[in-house]
Image (cartoon, rainbow, N blue to C red; front, side, top):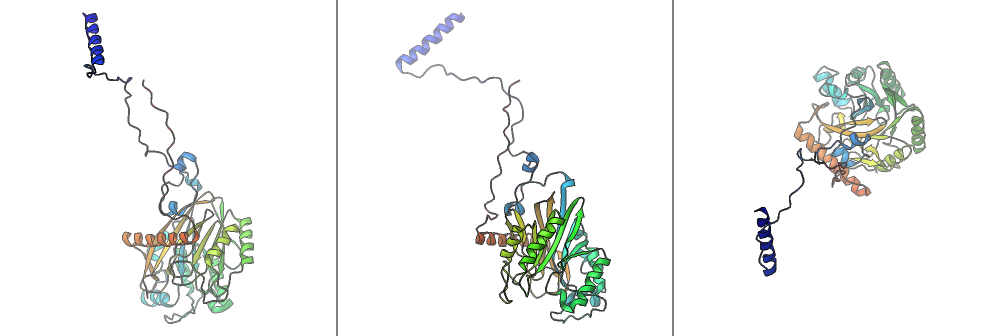
Length: 393
């Protein structure tokens, strides 16, 4: 019976082929044994850093749109926090002392955040000494009461940059009193010659500072200073006081003799061995640049200041720069707004997002001008590692 059925089926197939009619029997390919298991999810992959044990090269894309976590070994991570300009003088002193009766008042809302870093590095733009007069109308001659040093301690400042255009407002005596006061409170300083070195769990940070406001930066001294810091430290941090005020883009201040272009000076600092460049003075936060794989921050805006006359001068960013070993691998910024002539308060989420968008746009504008990669388009993710095909049991 089975043989007859086979012969009949063969005959029908042959007849169909001979007369051009469609075959009466449909032939279906039967697969091998079905593989039972979860479908592969190509997006569910370990991060690039986890797979390779090394972070990506620094770029604007990764800084503003990070797609990879910092490698997971916490013993390798060091953080550097940087603020904008601090001037505990003029309106700040008046508001803190005469209105709020509290020398710590300018620092209180942000102190828990700013001291939560391995090194907090700030720019102090006024000498501090006992008997400094409180004068909200003191124009451009600044000094702060010595008791403001307690605010620097509260916010966790470990290094204070003194290379700026207001440190010498009260002459060499004001400078000496400031340095002595900082020393007494365990705070190092940069900008007066010696390298400030801080050992953070076996990795040494070296800090130097240079003022380019009202005078040209001594480039020979800059090159020598970086070389000296390179001998003493694993990570060299250079802070500059530079550029034209009230601008979103870094540019030379044409109002001073032999003005320095911050972009050119920043590039030279990196070329001569700096690991990160910190900028301040313009009173507006500006964009950043990644030059030869190193970060240049051109301005952090105001931090503790009394310039309440515009939204831009009331704003600033606090930068946190994360190193893995001796390599900068990530950065983040939190925006602040100044109230009551001297107290920075963190912005709400929407305003913070707007500030960071502005900062990113300024960075892209600078990158476009310099012919460097921008944050857009964000490059495609690297391909996931190949997986061996699943086999049937």
